[in-house]
Length: 194
Image (cartoon, rainbow, N blue to C red; front, top):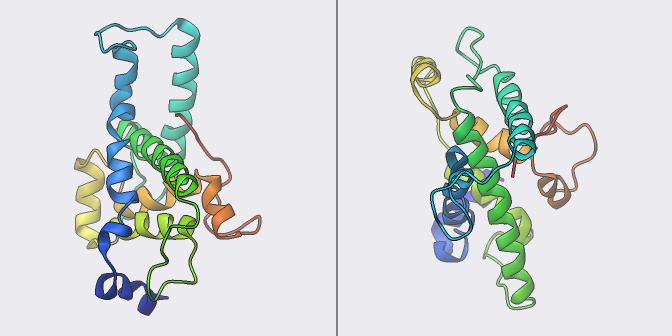
């Protein structure tokens, strides 16, 4: 698999593969810091949420806080992600992924039969490549001492969990890879805000 993934860099036009990277980030800002509640449909600064909407959002936000807060980060002496401190970024990552996936599916629908397979990665569907590329953009290695510093000082979850938890919240991932119930990536509880 690693050898196949390396072919992405060597043989393919990255523009054909990069939908998730700009896609998730393009859809990231509208969900970031609950900014959508601050502006009405024409862009005027106005809090338009009613009490029921606000209460529902708080409930969904708590799911994200608890979900990420339950993640113990390896090599940190038992430290967990601070779900409260990273909530806005986590909500944005999850919402951006969902919106980018829907946009990718719509683009595929409009171009049915026209999509090209990536040389060397023909065994993967467009949906699988979407998720593989999302994981690829966050691929990295963090030293244990840096992991502790990032947990204490960064408003983002560690890169590994910006992938794994976000994907665990996407049923489309499990469909794309035909994951059976109880697969390693599945979490006991999933969250969806947007």
